View: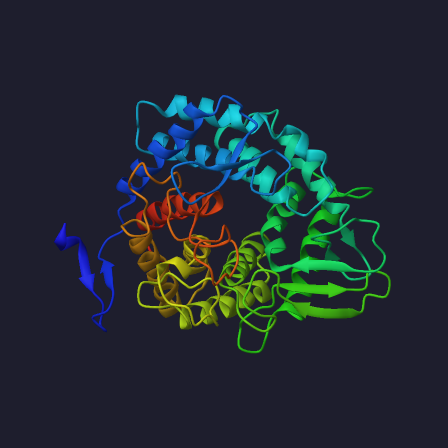
Length: 404
């Protein structure tokens, strides 16, 4: 409808005037159900899709938990809105979550947090299924084995026994919630206690503040250290435009991750870090609030955007808006999140037709100059996951009176 859109001040961008949660959720429900129906192997998870068919991965991949997480989020939405098929969504979520059970013991990467907390974590939050709790706590213990005391950081990539290099990525901030939650729910670190899980999470976050932030609030993607001496080796990128550029999803991971740290610890330095990352992110957004895959990109066109970064940021900014005490900042962060969701719940970002498997168009795994590459101009399952999360958070925030 023409009345649902507003021309931006520069007359170059059409911006929706409302967040259409119901429509976006309806689109999501059809796409999520279609994949379930067409995929008899419930251990073959969606990853990315340029067209009508998902490329799939097995449980060992870092994105495997996001589809079950989407199912849990739609079950939550269905329950909140008294939809008659809520129980069917719960059954789907349980079935797809079960295929990830063995990941609780997988110490090969930090992504165990992404995999287990999106699936079993959401499942336990919504159902209190007692069989899910030990899986979450074991996953936290497994993740703690990747902590290197000499550097004070969790190893993101590489073998635990590597004595020459420890690579840490900003994405790892997203996996700290597994440790934080488990520390309050009976989990423990390997050869340690529940309190040790909290100490590991705080140590990691503290060192990310030390190593990853630039003075302007942008962040490095990767930091390499010597795991024996603790010395810094190099700061670089793997998915951004250059070592010194600002990869937009990395910026979103930091907004969200440090807001999570503050949520659990109430330590003001984590709130300050989330705000610092958010202020850079917001200052560099285009009119429609959907960032390019790298803020230093000179590429134009929708195919070089990253809606997955936008969805992560929207969810983090909604929480951040509830954490800050300054009414002006509350409004600032919430309005950017709201404007982001306005764009994401309408065309061209919302993939409304059956010709696209994903809910969101124009996501990017990496900065890439070729729109035909699998790395860009695609749908990503984790973009869809964080969109659903952000929409649920938006609904809750709209129903809660402002603190001001």
